[in-house]
Picture 1 (cartoon, rainbow, N blue to C red):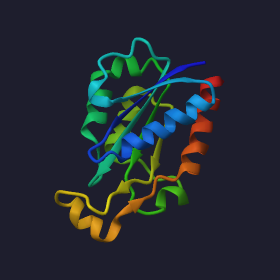
Picture 2: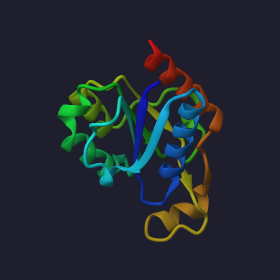
Picture 3: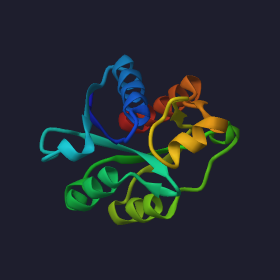
Length: 162
């Protein structure tokens, strides 16, 4: 099976949790997975495929996800790659495919990503900092739908096996 790197950019930990869900799902399909913060990825020599997940903040994909794609663009263009965004603080990601934000769309085009996916996000009720603390008053919750993630992981597994 494939060795898949699931790299993530997160500020509040929700996207790391999603990356771990993705890796666990791929592992249950027999793939060897590594989960790592995008900022800590120095090279991609030992991987067969990559998933880059980044949180969305005010319509922007997390800077660590963007920087990973930029600095590893040449190698990523040689590998099967999927880009993931997390962020909607409602059920919209489960209700239908959400068009990728410009950063994700541009990154996908740059490296020829196999696909892009947006999942719901998570915001803790005690989130610190503005605007998160203000948003938490009305939007706190966890919209990372495990069944949605599992269905998407099944699709990725199918493409990796093809």
